[in-house]
Length: 455
Image 1: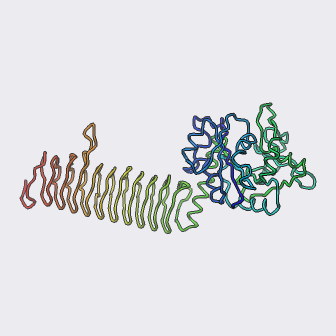
Image 2: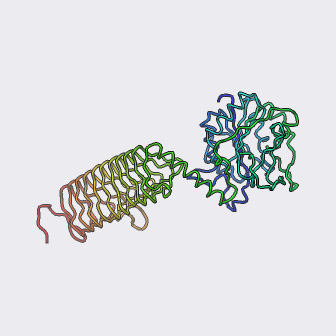
Image 3: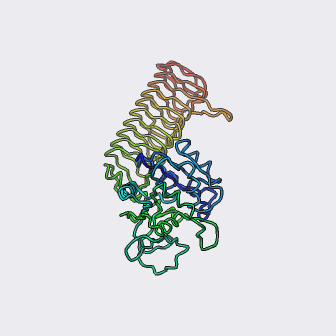
């Protein structure tokens, strides 16, 4: 695709969203709307990508892509034709062909666009655009043809007087242009709104080309879902529903089991290994990665976390956490940001872990809290154990050595260290370090030899 540049039109105001957030920054399956076309252009191998932004969303869009794309600002909302024309100075003469996409139709996929591009090149067209057949035009642009089947124009919904409700050929909003032809003709796109405003539409190029015997052709998508765009919150939810179904189907065909797929939510950037089972009412969000042969759920939430192979997360929540291989957690436990469980760790029910690392084989089987701590290999943390890590002003760390045994209801008042193979008695309040192999008992805890009997 070294002949192609791409433009993403992301300057629309999106007033119908009724939101303080720019429409293109709203998310579908955890991914901003504007990311869909930009990532599709990259997937297609397009060499140069320009995003047209508005003053109100420029900062947000640039935060997503940094310097991986180029930007043009459309200062006033004067329509898609004006927006495209503003990118001319960056694109004129660089590549012979240009692919233009909107930023509010995230369901358009590679297998619809790639054949369109190939057809455009094979036929040496001046303009080729994607269409789909729909039961009615509704609020979409309708393709008009002459008796010989040649495209004569694209009629915007606001301009159409056809309310017959009959099947229609609809403009999807994906355009291929010969850049030489485009820049020679885009200046002829004038105001076209029936409301009398000054907006200029890309769709006018179809009529301009037809009137000058240019080569204007279409390519049809076989998937009617490609038509669905986002103008309001209702359409946002409808598009999300389709995308979630597509994502689930992708992973099931790749070897992931979902007994009740309709109850499972998986975001677009998630990765899941073969033979993993996702049980009902589970959400896997953000950039989470799950390995092979895992069981996630039921009723688990995994957000921006990494889970290794042969793991289980039952009715629990993970946020920005890591589980290495053969780790199990839950039910009803919570790994907060910074939690890291090495291989073979077991976390039982009603346990909360934050900014802490459990070394291989460590166990915490029952309710308790571990925050800002390092837990040694094979350590056993008893029910009700709490790391008292916050003194009202600062956070402090707790260190528990390998093989240590922490008794039920132990309070570890940080900063504090419990040495390797050390033990704390049930209910101990540990305010001073416990040397390796020693026993701490009482309130406040006193250090004694482990072999000594205590009442």
